[in-house]
Image (tube, rainbow, N blue to C red; front, side, top):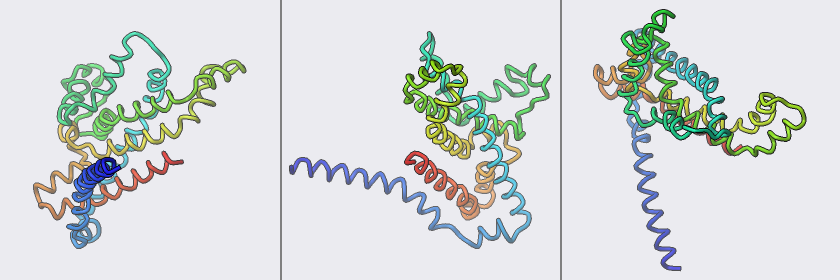
Length: 261
């Protein structure tokens, strides 16, 4: 009994250190927050307000677009990886997960190597009039690239958790494979899909390294934070960081709510 209590005490102590390590930086952000600087940026100074507001809108619009793109393109792939067995499946799953392991700057370079003006697909992108360098499309491409593995892996787990017998019953009643997927599998997997979408959106919102390489302009709030840190120092960057911190907290509260329900 004493050994159990001692082990529990050690585990609790380590857990407390971990919680402090994670909590203190976020708490410090709010403790050092200066309301006057925040008011100057978002209320009193028209120039700073215009820049900050534009960066926030660009960030939200691009991250939402990237998440929608991941949902549209990721659901079929996640379903195939969850349901089908085929040669090379492990290789394909590894390819899907590669963006998770790439340093942010390398992810940006990879995007340029594929879709940039001098990239591998440049003849096709130029013919289609697609430009990613310093464009909104480039921001969406970067955000979608770095967040896609999170959505696909989460959705794949959701599809794999659905009993195949339910699909078989639907097929035996005359439903096509597509109709069985839409009416049976997809509704039962909505919680996993929603969780994956929230996680992917959070990852897209947090990206900065690849954006600095691919699409510095139009500036997202992350890029603007780096720029203002060099220009104005910590006070201004804290004021810019607060909306993102609050959004991150709200997103993960939403995620926990979705999972619990």
